Length: 240
Image (cartoon, rainbow, N blue to C red):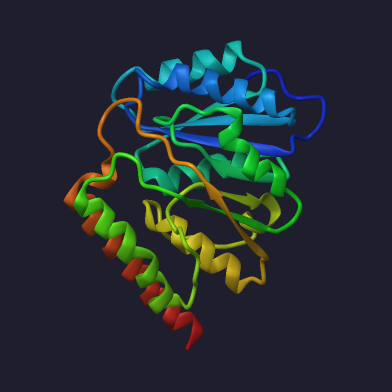
């Protein structure tokens, strides 16, 4: 991993930014994220994970890491958002780790609800008040998915697939099999099973600043469901 100048002490928060073909949004997104973290007055680091991009994302990530203190960059073949987060988490040094979407410009007010709860639980579950930019099919899917997770795994949280903050030692102590979107549900289930403590917070969701959300594609929805059931079969075998 290439990195900017390290902080004088271990950061309180490591933010992983998965990036796949994000040459337009990556630089402004990372700079906004650094500014938001600074405004919150928290020691932090940002880890950009180039997830097998075919455009200039990789070179932009390396340039940001070379220029900006507290920013690192790493590269991998395409593994999806879950795989990218797992890779970034492996490089993290913060007490807590969280994922931040490259297509959502960060402001201090977006991070403050998480930062206010650091140290109160092992997992801080961000629950969206509204789904910005969702079409009817996405809204239906987002309503069904948490209920399906509750039925399959007995995990009842209001928002499975949004931004969560994890105590790093807890997250790095679980075994994960999923690499795409289902990794987010798998992480919550594995952490619950390991005895981790949870707290839910209400957060706002912003509309994308560009591009089209991958979750809006029917094939991604089917892949997500297939991954969830694949994990359920593994989990059920382990439990019984």
